[in-house]
Image (cartoon, rainbow, N blue to C red; front, side, top):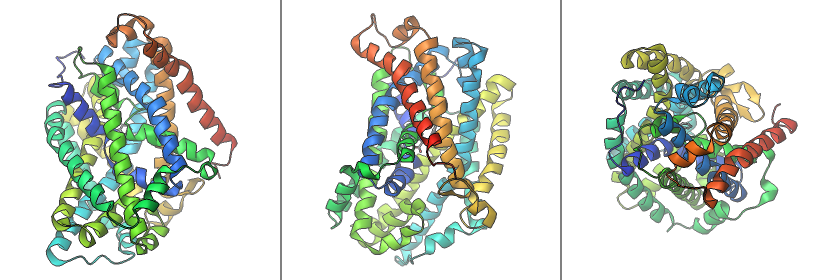
Length: 456
Ligand code: TRP
């Protein structure tokens, strides 16, 4: 529907909102812990390669589709391509709903950590080993937190996103960055620094498996919010005279810096305070919520103030991501089914919350939900959905999107949309990546995993 679409106030408006979508739990929570699980170095290098070679070109592709079509993903694929392409949009909607369902659970943990930090700041730090595992297995706490975060997300989405998001991220992103830099600097004064830097930046390819490659690529898509049309939605609000390349580059650089800073910080804390490794040995899923409070309250000048501030910012970073995930399904219901925005939001939120309950109870609260194992070494509903969405749905969605931009859109419209007057060399490289390299890379990795031992 072409009802006067809102536009971002400035290039920075788009960059900040898109970065708000990209920077989230993927950077702060997921990247450090899967880097840990995949033994660092080589995994990080593969991740960076995936970001540069697949992420950046695809991000440009998604923004381009959105700006060209001025539509949400499903109608965009139909309008610029044909009805045959709409399943790509629907796959994105499904992936968005799946990710949102478990993302809300982790987002809820940030509210918990915030509350805990307030308590510690007032009464002293009293975290005990194993406390986090206990928290994870309390079904009622998990459900309440997840519900709280779902309601917050739905409230914002139901009011329409373009204005609120731009304003909020304009303030919150810089504050988050500033705190992260201070946190990093503090961490770098600790003993474990050299060991941490070596673990993150010195590659050892003997540690990499086919799944490791797939997970690195999946994480690149996940962290940059690619593969399900979220950037198509945001791209539809970007002004015609902005450079798609520069905007995408900004988002990619911001997102990747945040991921690396967070990862180095956490690894340093873990290597500096050995008893933390016991707490993480069972599962590193709670790394963000275990390591940082320890540093805030035992190592950091001003930590008692920054602790709560940090976790409230984590909650906001998560919120700007859940909003963008929710917006994909909601905008579709509005465009396609013709529902009002509030109705579309309530229905989406209710359906997604049903899925959330399964994830929320899969950290020990309900035995069968916690032990189900569809993919090898991914136990429980939460781990299963995360693996399915990030490592299969997003790469496949991304693959189809690159094919769409590369082969279906046509050179003329892409050149025009990119603001070029002729086919420059960078343009040719970009097009080749979308047409040939990206699809081959995704297929090659999926093929290897299928032929290998990923399924138990
Ligand atoms: N990128 C976000 C993060 O790193 C998560 C996210 C938000 C996302 N919107 C998305 C992932 C769209 C994939 C697609 O936390």
